[in-house]
Structures are given as structure tokens and as C-alpha cells.
Image (cartoon, one colour):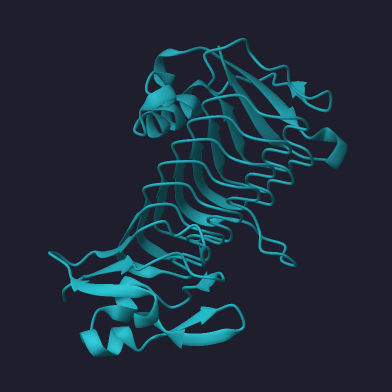
Length: 271
């Protein structure tokens, strides 16, 4: 199997829908077949060759090059292989992924990694609102895998998150970990208003070097310690480096909630 390099010719007039453009889907296709793949352009469908020039890759990686901030559903329901984007992408990046790796060397739009179930999505820049959350009308957010955001995150990050690990090196907007059911979210910066709103279970780690953020009023101090659990969790998060590298050596404070929703979530503040 050999990979492909798809280079955006010029910014399209309307948004592009790249559903189906995954490493496994393109692996056995010829160059002519790839160029004929249907791509959504507004309310029309046009051949991929209208928008991208095609070159063979040096390895098995599928590479997209250019400013793809107008391209939605990059890595949509990706089920294996490696996909690298040299630029920013639009909405729904990595949504519904089950395996494989997607690396965005830029920013991602709304709903990145929503309902992700496996694999790894790395975004070198920022992500928009509702990352690692749920698709509109659904009840379950991120369900597995790993999301790493080297920049900042928008509002409602991890909304209804059910499993997996989501790491943000920078800051997050309002309603971080809202209605979280399970999984782990780690934040290297500060969060906006309504932290952990409606949180039921899961772990939210605040690793900022600045003054500790006060817990929400509906969270209460944890009575029992969790030293063994913290050693395991902190070592796992420390692998990501950056603000999390020294977590195993730092002291923590734990709070439980959101009690207003009958929740048993865990808010861990690193001191």
C-alpha cells in the first residue's frame, strides 16, 4: 500500500465535504480512481481532481496540504491508517474515529473528535466549540481514543464525554466537561465559567501553574485520598509533556460533584 499527497489547488468558493477521504479508503485505488472520487461542494458533488492535485506519497501516509479550513469532516469515521494535514481544517475533524492517527498541523473548527471511539487525534493549534463532545441530537460524546490539543479549546469541550482521554495544553472556554459521564480531561491553562456543569462521573485535571481555580459551589472536598490512583493517572498524562510533564511530583486537591446533578465526578486541582 502506498500513500497519496493531495494538494489543495486554491480556496474553493463553497465549503467542501471530505467524507470518505481516509487512508484505508484510498489505499487500493489508482490515481485516476482517486481523482474521480466525489466531493461535496455546497449542494453539488464534484470530482476530487477539481480541487486537489494528486501526487504519490513516500510512505503509507495520506497527506493533505494547504489551508483546509474550508474543508469539513476530515478523517470522518476514520478506521485505520495515518492521515496528516499540513494546515488547518474545518468542522468535524476526526469525528467518529475508531482507530488510526490523524495529525492536524494547524487549527480545527467546531466539533473536532465528537463521538470519537478510538485512535488518536492531535491538533497542533486550537479547536473550536464542542470538541470531544456529541453530535447534535445525540446523547453520547467522545467514547474512546485520545485527543491532544496543543493550543486552546472553545466552549463545551468534552460535553457528554463518555470515555477516552482529552488533553488541552492551553485554555478552555465555558462549560468545560459539562454533563461529563466518564473519561479523563486534562487542562494545562485556565477554564471559563461553569466548570464541570452537570458532571456525573469522570476525572477533570486542572494542571495550570497559575493560582488554583476555585471549585464550583456544587463540588465538595473529597474525604478519602487517592494517591495510588493519582500516581497511575499522572504518569499516563505526563507522557504528553508540556504542562503535564511534572504531574507525578505535584500535590493535588480533589473535589467531587456536580452534586446539583447527583454526580460523582472528580475535579483534581494540581497545586
